[in-house]
Each structure stands twice: as structure tokens, then as C-alpha cells.
Length: 234
Ligand SMILES: O=C[C@H](O)[C@H](O)[C@H](O)COP(=O)(O)O
Image (cartoon, rainbow, N blue to C red; front, top):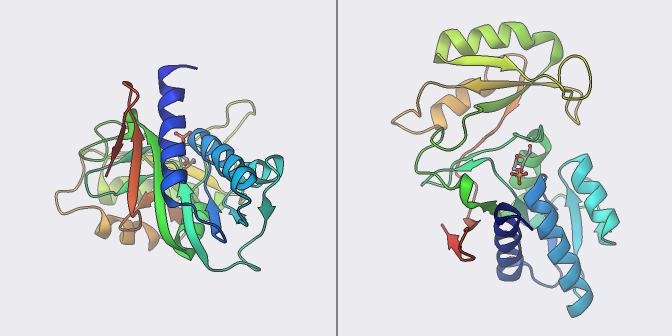
């Protein structure tokens, strides 16, 4: 296992061991780090006979829950969650996150909002003082396909930087999210000195924007796996 993978695994296992309790209703995030969290949740559920209910925040999360034999639910049957566990592309010193690098952010934000607590699991590359220092691919913004061009133009003229339509990797044309939307990656010039709240609200107010990948004021704690085998907590 590479250093980065070992770091992801370490962070995920530490968070699950610290936060997951019997009877919990869990929100399951997306990405490569969450894979290790679900692995550990399933391990503990078997070993400790934990009764857990899991609500996915993406197609991938749903598959992970099923593959690991965990009890699958949804927000209709389980609208209130005890804990959400998810990865991040970058975490700043105020626990503001960029998410959506893997194309998942809308359902993740809904699931996080339904949870009493939200814990982030990540490797050392995501640990940052200010957004943009480590993650160079911008803020992912999920948009209604017909609106992508005016949204791109409005973001660039109001906030500066470059707003790029994310293209699919093994298909001609744009990436399509689990929700049938496009993603615009907004490569901003610099992190706003006053924080991200205002920009987050303004992005949400642009017609055609479904949701953005700035997660502000919702994470309770972040676990970062380090290269030397230790875990940093924020
Ligand atoms: O779109 C994907 C999600 O927001 C992920 O949680 C985020 O990209 C982090 O993923 P990973 O754990 O693979 O770095």
C-alpha cells in the first residue's frame, strides 16, 4: 500500500473508531478515503455486533454499503442522522472544505446537513492553512446543464478566476453527475480574506447553480493521516 493510501486508511479508521457508536444512523460520503471508513465500519459492526443504518450520499457510497453488507437506508426513511463521515479535497484551518473533486457534492451536502455531527477523513495532502494552497483544481460547482455557459460567465465576471466545464474521462463531452448535472471547476485567484461564507451564498444565488463544493461551518473534526504513520486532528 502506498504512503498516501496508508494515510487515508489511518485517518478513516481513527475517525470511525472515535465516532461510530452502536445504534447510529450514519451518512456515508464518497471518494477513495471513505472506502476505508466503510471497511472499518463493517469490520466493527461484525466484531461488536453494532446495529447501524447507513444512508449513502452517492452511487458509489450506495454500492459500498451494499458490498459490505451494511443496512442501507435513504433520507426518506432516515431523515435524521447521528453522524456523517466523508472525505475532502482540501481542509483549511477553520475546517472549511472543498469537496466535489470526484464529482459528488450535492447529495453529500444534503447528507451532512441531515447529520448531527460531520467528521472529515483525509490524507496529509488535504491539510491546508487556506483553501487553494494544496488543491489547485478549484471549487467544484454543480450546475443545470442548460445553464452552464451563463453560470461560467457570471462566476468569472463577479469573482474573477477561471470557471472550467469539467469534461468526462472515458466519454466524449462533459462529466455528468449522479444527479444528471454538469460540474464547473472554478479556479479562483485567491482565498477571500473575510472567509468563504459570502461567496458561498452568492454562488448559491446564481440561477442554474444547484450547489457548490464549499462546505462551510459544518465539519466538527477532521482526521488527517500523515506520511509517518501518525494522525493529525483538527
Ligand atoms: O467528489 C468527491 C467527494 O467530495 C470526495 O469526498 C472528495 O473528492 C475527496 O475524495 P478522496 O477521498 O478520494 O480524496
